[in-house]
Length: 501
Image (cartoon, rainbow, N blue to C red):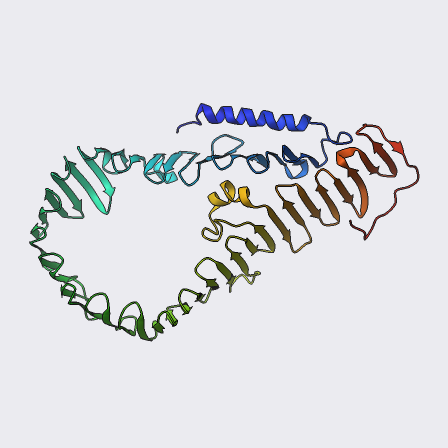
């Protein structure tokens, strides 16, 4: 397995050094105990937070641009939107994203992979870990080691061999399109000056084509195919060795048919007018013309479509409705296990989705988005609201978008749960608030800071410590001009129960 490159090791060392620097930065008004939760901020230069009890720490620099975060055994580094890198403490499992979605890679026990827009793919490791053991720079270079067939290599268009690519078991070519040979199952197709001349061979199988003039192929007892002046004339007999043989023929675009004992489909002036009778699924469908008018009836599929005015169609457990297309759409799934409904206005301008499991009995999942203004999510008792929302309505559950791009434009976000816990941020912590049960802390930089624990005010500060009040147990002190010592106020701590700023 390939280890991490030197650049990522140096990045880790650099950002761990910054985290140590953040720890050494003076806390306003005095030092905090290492065992206690810490918050040190100087907006927008840095924002450091830690919770030793939860094994959590984070350092943000320049608002959302730089992040170093540790959660248990996992550490994440972000240089948004250029780079995201996450690793486990043992160094074995890593995830890397470069200007997502342009590049992404991961390493693990027995696995190393990387892809760039799925045109550059690198995937090597142990097959039992899910590795394909191959490299691809599409469409030019391919090499790898197939688990059963062995190593392969191809340099397009000069020549080479590929295994299990592009729907074929094997592909061989030389000076493409001059010569090529493909194999799928027992069928071998040899192409000369692809796609013009081809020969088909196999077990009880033969055929040829002079495209687009004429072609034919046949496998005894399985299929027969012919075409002339492709795609105008064609005739096919398929699945002859099954209990549902099909006969397809057509004169494009005037007429086409696909007939079998279980399903009959006929089309006139493709794709406008068609009729389908499906005995297997039990429905009948008319398109006149497609896609504007469609009438369907039956147990599996039924509905009426008259676009752009109205559409109400059910397919299996799913139901879709349009009103004044594309103004308003309702999509529903109602099965024995799941109910899901999504209402949309102008595709992605506004979306409202609710999803509920009929087996678990848990609270439904909810997502609302009004592009580009906001997105709201509720799942398992946790709620999240954010604005702006530029990409989230289009890719609502894409983690790469959420961690690499969304923090750059989320000028306000808040997250809360059903137990009264809450965390909010405005302008990347120019104002922030955290509530954990009865404990509350908030800051409006650089004017005010406030912290309350166990229904008692323990700290208030003006201008990052120019004037501040602190209370520890029964001792209360007033600090002035950022000095570490304070003036004792005397007396017992005063309860502030029930009062908040």
